[in-house]
Length: 281
Ligand code: DGL
Image 1 (cartoon, rainbow, N blue to C red):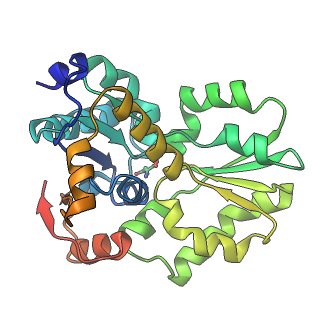
Image 2 (image 1 turned 90 degrees about the vertical axis):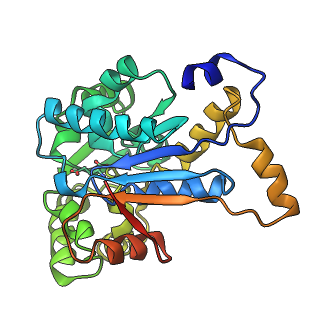
């Protein structure tokens, strides 16, 4: 059914949802951009919080998680997938694209835009151990980091802070201070938020680094790229978009989580910015 839509240009509106997932709640930072740009599209979001963080896991283990989640999202009729996780993209996107025949959009740290934006030629990258150790990241540096100095910093523990909803906790600020220090000391004027959990800590990072430092996150660019791909493939829900202008037809955003935490619903609602119902995944 999915390949039918891909191959059939006559289908110009596709009511099926877009499936988005992350190791946990971080991908909600990307989901927000997608929802803002395409408010008429139904969205499914899977937070694999029981297995977060992915950053310290082996690539094969991450790929097995991605397959399980993709199977679930496709079984729930997703027309496209967004891997809203830099670590999972680095570990698994090639294997996913071989296995599934629907559009799969991934994320990578914004080294290219940062290198272009930097005035002094020194950029910092905050990311997980898994992302920084990956072949994809090495290729990014090779392709776009040659003419700049790139200071990388693995941020062990930050994903967990966001998972717990500790967005302004003193221990979260302490980690941010520790991880931003080397970037500040090297004089980075542009810092890449190379993990989708980190945009939720932007306010703390801004407290720690100088006002002159630009923080770059790729959520908005990924949402735009997703829209472009869906448009090219005739997969946008054009009918709903048109009818939304006339009526106030609401799109559905459905959250799935396998978190055991008592406050899972509260954390997701806090990050999403409004009350969210959570289904078990
Ligand atoms: N949000 C994920 C990312 O963008 C976090 C990975 C993890 O769970 O370590 O990399």
